[in-house]
Image (cartoon, rainbow, N blue to C red; front, side, top):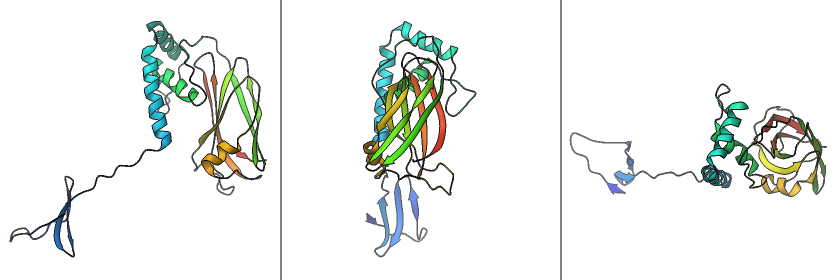
Length: 227
């Protein structure tokens, strides 16, 4: 910080210009460098960036035939982009979208997605609080194949304000072709602190990934009452 002495023509300057701040305080008129604010990145943001870099490397490690297979798959089974339903993912984007989700479960890379398509009608989720456990049960309704099931859950929300305001966090994954069962208390408390009580309301997001191809079934976020 340095003091400033003005002349007859310019009596005072206040504000910031190109990273330099002019102000008046008890010492008189001063000039100092405006601090640069850097918002720290969350661990989840860093992890996502690392995953994206790894997927870029994995894409270029594929053979020309592998990349062509993903481009063909994306064109044959178009998937809209997240922000524009009239725009569709290309082969590279489809590859990254699938494997970014799958990396939450394992590091398997599907090099050539098969053409066989299955259907996933539902991922049933029941959460039961039996302190200290938070038991997950349910199952998948599918036409066939093996699936990676991903579950994202929010913190407890108010039952009087029926809106999804709380962010959904990844909690659970499993490969399943039928039933689901697990105690997810430790995963939930690691993020939110305490397990929800019976009667509490949370929001959930359910995603299914076919293990043999690029199929992604994503169900809209929905509310769920803890049993």
